[in-house]
Image (spheres, rainbow, N blue to C red):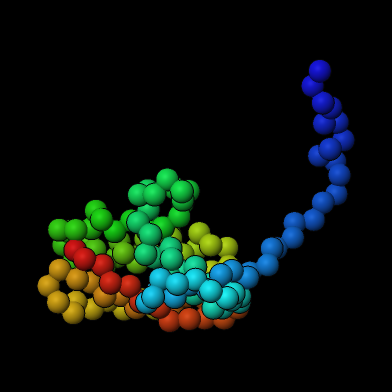
Length: 134
């Protein structure tokens, strides 16, 4: 016998945002300790998203991370606008990040693109950067 769902979808319900608290990661030492929330938690989430290659790890959904491996060997005229699009897409996947703007590109050495940008979050704004080998 199949359970009845009659009237189930007619019920009123409220969508509640979950707490923003997460464990603090130290990328320099690889240690995890304590907790953070607010803008610090979003900065950490953005760092993790931008340092996770999309489609490479089965633990993450296909919407998580950023694709950079296929940029290797491509011309700068393609890489810069594509990197801007990919960073924006990857970060706005997180509902706490509302906008990504103010992109600045630099070529510090051959085969590397350094990009600076601003993320706007529900807690404020933050300057971030990413280096990509091309």
